[in-house]
Image (cartoon, rainbow, N blue to C red; front, side, top):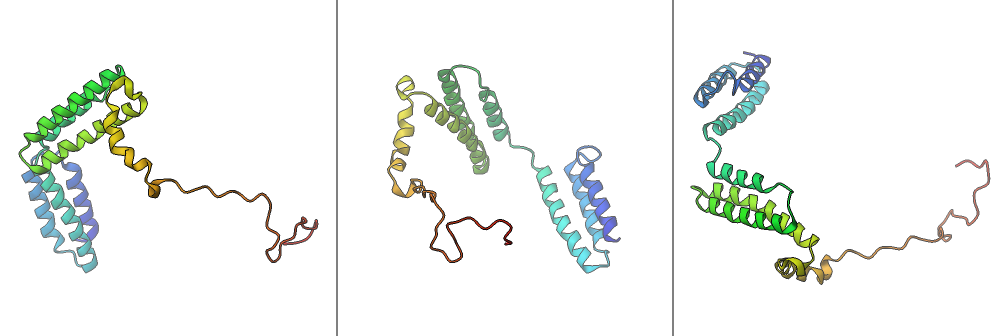
Length: 191
């Protein structure tokens, strides 16, 4: 087998997933067969390149063997259902807070820490929604802005976080540099 044949077979296997090949074990077998054939590539550099692609195919096979997490799917559904923009600010806030509580409940029941963390990351999006509502709604109307203000109050007075002062633009060109004149160049004079 030469490298172009390897590359064509690799592409065929990748494209076949989900159409011709639907079983992860059949996909793994196809990759194993390709690995055996790749060992016959005569050019060492091309064989090394093929090996790198085989490692990517191994990762692809591993991803197909472990289906999507039910925990993450449920949390995603809650996030999508909550993300609609209709309603008043108070309705959106209430819906968002309820969704955060539901996602936290789903995450707490996750079988692994990775699934739990992936589900809880969705709460970050919802927390941003609450922050936007806090910024757009006067605090006395909602009573919810105080937590955000308490967290960010220290930043407002931190001199290391204030923007640098603007440098004023010069009002006239400096005349003390060598080669500068206060009068314009003579017409027709070359540069």
